[in-house]
Length: 251
Length: 158
Ligand code: HEM
Ligand code: FES
Image (cartoon, rainbow over all chains, first blue to last red):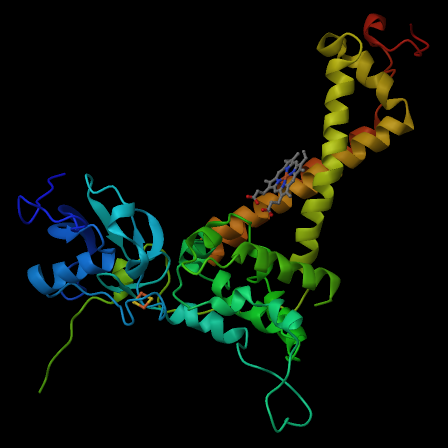
């Protein structure tokens, strides 16, 4: 690793800069018959993220590199990708946490159709998300003000409200990889968010959806999803709670 | 403009058969729930049955050297061991078959392959369970004309 300080008398607290090789899985449907690896050398700072390295490649070396990002701060969930073999948000993966002496591999998330380079078709993911009815279901009179809820009741599903739908979990799940029919962790997390919400009355409907052949019972507790989640949601635990609710018919 | 698009579809880049995307029809039964529950409950029972079986056959007495026709015949003379072995046979077969069914569901990509693999599995299950059950219930510990030295002590031929 060559450290190229800007000046010999480097200022205290100056950010070190070094060169890394980013190995990106490229695929252009208009030219390539199959995806292939491409290496790019970029000069980066110790404070940079994978997203900054990708920007450098796109802005300075190859403008055709295609990937999604929007907020660049881990909120929108656009830039989930497989970095050194694990699902991460490019905007939340610091280069200093990776080994810069080896090429850093960047691939599209697995199990979803690749459209171009790092962009995948998210439709299968959102289709199962829509099937769990991720919206408030109530009956009776509409309150004139907000629907009140105790802090304790809110706490019950707090963890699963954090999902940003980046698909890092679902595309890390080996059961989802197999035939893509499994609802996947993200859909279950978002069902959990409403099933355990005291203001919601659609728990039975959602539990019935997840009792399906492709529902929670396909989960094999591999914990890949919990490990992949950029928001630190305890996904495997949430799935277990949905299984529990189905077994006891109690939420 | 007659711009003919001849771009290969994205499906060329996918490992798994995923495009066009179609979700399979929803099911409205509790089958997978009970299958899941059964795996855990039979697992707990199998720990007791299998470890007990191994301990009694291989550890107690002369250990592995005691296992011969007379030993098995002696055990199956008691209804207790008949029930034990029958429960072990049925639970292990149901548990193992359901486990392999799960694996087939995971790995088979085409519906036809999936169907035929499962048919083979269920045929093997039926054959093993029927034969095993038959042996446990129709077993004759004292077959006529056998070498008396090999028979258990309670046989009249000894
Ligand atoms: C010693 C006691 C046993 C216990 C506690 C046990 C427990 C379990 C559990 C809990 C599962 C479900 C795993 C999941 O859903 O992710 C499982 C799966 C399985 N079991 Fe057992 N089991 C035992 C013995 C056996 C035996 C004797 C066989 C073979 C006849 C067997 C074959 C399988 C197979 C093929 C699977 C599916 C593997 C998979 O889902 O990936 N097990 N076992
Ligand atoms: S760009 Fe918005 S989550 Fe990373």
